[in-house]
Image 1 (cartoon, one colour):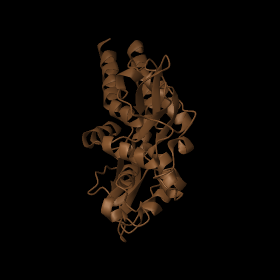
Image 2 (cartoon, chains in turn cyan, red):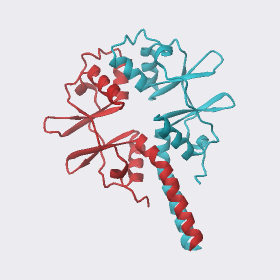
Image 3 (cartoon, rainbow over the protein chains, first blue to last red):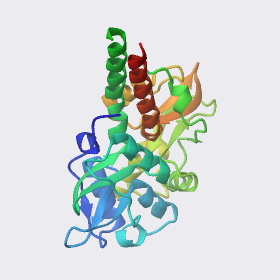
Image 4 (cartoon, rainbow over the protein chains, first blue to last red):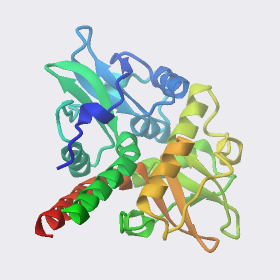
Length: 141
Length: 141
């Protein structure tokens, strides 16, 4: 119904961190790159979980020592993922269902991107154009 | 083109904080309510700015003492706002243009809600249905 797929709108560059990274290191990574999440991987680049601004916020809220607390202790795992071939509206529904804002995109075991609610929001004006085209088709038929 | 407006998809309950609130207090507010931003208001409830997880993240990243640093020193101000009557795709374009993920919704000087990229992402399956209806109309005409 919506012809474009996750791969067309996702962010291709994804930052990864290890379970040993500290809260402070993750905060610096987020701030330096203007991002709100990173995928947690092991040495073989297998996806172990995701760490988000909200996860880190809860550490700050509970007065954890963010210079010492490690990602492995507060990441979200297991993580819900999608594939680059998935439809955009299926991915949107998956986010809604799990109350999450980010989906790592994994093809054949390899992390290839990240889909966020921001990617989806930026896609809305293009959806508007799809509706316009569908209606124009209606008038011409 | 997209008939529904910002008021139909926005979050109606918006948390507000004062410029004197500390980073820690804001982190606790975010964590306790599962939110990522709050609107900064003065005593007369005038909108002064917005404070987001990312703003707080930058304080953590720069090793600020979050138990002491006050919202007024690190909030985003002035803040881009929309109205409940604005179209959803215009709001999506506004977010894209300013690289922001949240728009306080202000009607006649009163804060009435918040529109986030999450609200917009949840709206996408409904847009898909609008496209489907437009195409069905095409076949029937």
